[in-house]
Image (cartoon, rainbow, N blue to C red; front, side, top):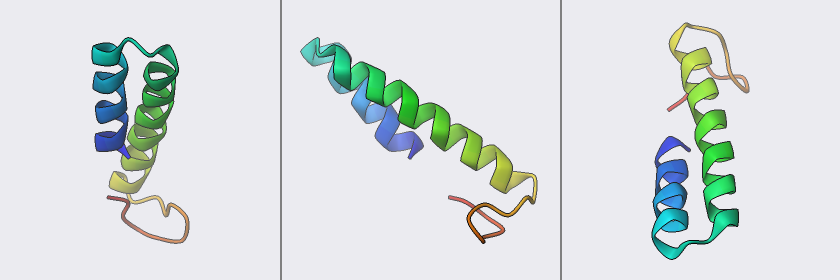
Length: 51
């Protein structure tokens, strides 16, 4: 999800499409939160690791 968020951010920036920028930020933040929860050992969606 983090990579998808970065790709959407870049596409939104290059193509000047604000909805891609917004969706990219949201996906990037959700991916970062899930990554942090998974790395501290907290189960995310029934898994010990999220990657």
